[in-house]
Image (cartoon, rainbow, N blue to C red; front, top):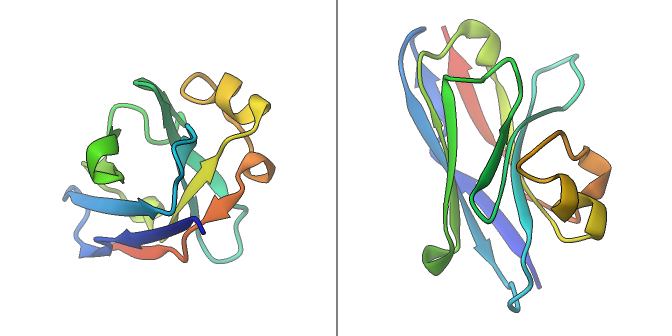
Length: 128
């Protein structure tokens, strides 16, 4: 049973940094596209970054400020967020997807939330 658990959210002042983590359990050896999404109240869910075999995709809104990384031996994916802005305030969700479309697009372009099979419950990031 695949589970994703996010941690590391919190409150920070504008210009500061945070790192959120996603622990991925229950994987039986299948390769997944791993991604971070975020959603602020009243706004659509936004695909922030994805990673697959070292290829990385970033939304324009976070390019050069956020870094996605993964350690498969630790079943963990991180999102390092630097130079945070108030508009980065949102619930951040980790997602995993293994279908053909997800793995083809992952790390190169937006995959789309509907291609991800598994989701964490999210961790709140607040920037003031």
